[in-house]
Length: 304
Image (cartoon, rainbow, N blue to C red; front, side):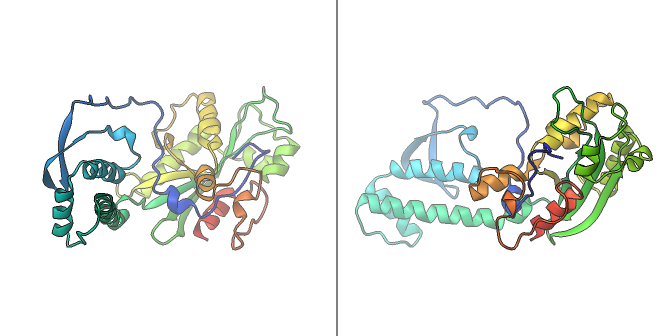
């Protein structure tokens, strides 16, 4: 569940998002080497004679492949014209041209080779499953700051990333223990009735069922997976608050997730403007209430 005043679906950017492992909070930056630290330049494991470069910290690059490319470009910039021609000849490339042309030719060749290798290894870094989650929580119109939100629905849609098919679902209502009576606004917004939550289990019981369901699906053991949410509210706010209210330790499986709202905005260069923004592509159609069955609709949009 998002802030009731700002709810929007996700888009096709999941293909990009799957490759973005969410960054853990905190963590220390690796120490940077001193400028004096040098090593020989290598092309696919072969050293070039007489060329040196300054090493860079892994934290300077977002992907190891681009780190290699950047380091090699620095090495190429320090090569003599004779070294450039020798290396181009080794790769059976054109050796004619001024020095700047030779540099560009060698850089382009090396970049193309490394990116092709990265694409061939794409499947190995792919998640097997995406667990799409969209909590529903107690709420009041206007969201007064003193109001305590409690999770009242825990839905999970299991998306197979290889087939883009929904393989299974988990869905349980949750009985609130502080604000036991749902407001008319909450019932209208979520589509959840008072009778449904009255007959439901408490959050600790439902969370245990979720964990057992994930174990049954062998998520995290046999299969690689990631959680996916429409924004950061579900995990950073609602689950965090609920665990404190229920006096539970925050579940380790929920410490990282894919924020499809952020990935979509970055991919399509679009700012958030409210519900329906992520359905701007003609083939994507928004269906149903803003919050009812949101996990399933997120999955449908990702599949489209």
